[in-house]
Amino acid sequence: GDLALVQLTRESTNATLQSMIVPVVVICSVLLGFFLVAGWMIGRREREAAHAIEESLAAVGAGNPSSPKWIGTDEMGDVEFAVSGVSGEMKKIFEQLQAMAAGNLSVQLNGESGLLSAFRASQASLLQLSKEMTVLARGDVASGAKLAGDLGTAFSQLSAALGATISQA
Image (cartoon, rainbow, N blue to C red; front, side, top):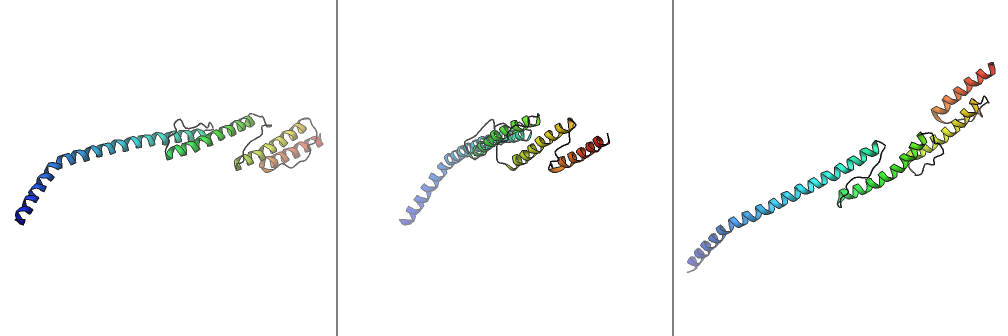
């Protein structure tokens, strides 16, 4: 009795398992296909996000900051958002520096970075140098103010040479 029941249960179970193999394989294949397509789409999206960040950072390096052209909603989007903020600030700073490079030494550099502090010091030295050169160009004696750095040393030598020339004349 029990042996026949066990045998019948085995046969029934084997038949059920054999009939389920094809549907399970199909379902697993479909799920695997969905996962592959989703992974490919996510990878493509991440590649586009990384490319947008790369372009934005290259623009900053070239002196023409711009925000990323595409901002996602994932972790890459957080990075893109931060790069966008930095690009906006750098654009303002570059505009100020370009005005300064064009000869407008009255531009006030806004910001708190170490680079801006160095440019402010250079700006102050350039303004002082400009005043001293104006005095020398008029033929007057320079005030003798000591300018910092290599520019100050070069100006001191120039001033001394011009002073010697004037005193010999």
